Image 1 (cartoon, rainbow, N blue to C red):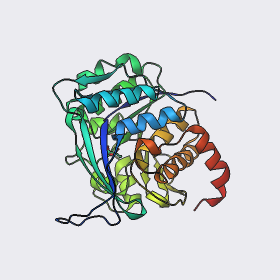
Image 2: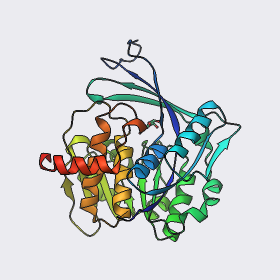
Image 3: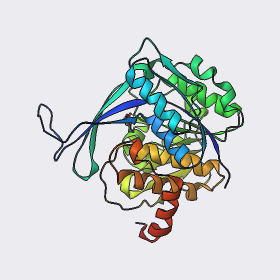
Image 4: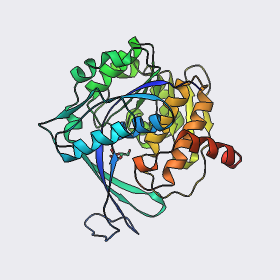
Length: 310
Ligand code: RIB
């Protein structure tokens, strides 16, 4: 099987995680388990997911000049990522996510972006060489939109498939130029509603296709996804039912899996099924990067669980 070349432009965080029996309500203190410190951040999770699935991955990011930043860089290297374009910023703290995980894998996440906020269009432009020959470019929104826009344009120029995972949901409208430079948009239901103003995934997908993207995949958690393209009628892609321990990084795993499968040349619906398997395995373990599966684990899951499609 060929190794797809993927460029991921996005965030890296240190995740501080506590598991609780019940998620706190505003103003409430809940005692939980011991603190778990892991590597996270949507961009880094997507990059690591793709690398564990067999892709050659270049990660473009800005990390903090503090001890967390040093640990993140080491961890990315250990995963075999090309980190030539990961800048350690002496003037910024690392991105940190505070994560509370409750029963059934539900979570609450608040992020201090730190150095992620300083990833610029010029930083991405400086990584132009990495885009040459890339099959897929993957972008999310924990780093500035300007950086994502430059990445999408470089991806287009390189004739790569450009995937934008619009997470977290933006607080201001995204520019038309970004939609126009993206091939595949992968919002979850909430992000699709924020971006389109429509609560039904079908109507949201229609609105978003109208903004210039070729394909919209609205992820629906355990219910799978709605896949809509400009040329074919929208269809539902079922997900896998698993025992959820922690939903953190499920979306990142989905996007990493989708990028790898498309980079290998798989057709869209088959790639979505593969991405669902990667996400399903991820939610069965605690933590973001510790839970991301290898290619062999996904293959075994698909072989054993294929019949358990919802
Ligand atoms: O998508 C999960 C990620 O969101 C976590 O790893 C956390 O860092 C936040 O960025």
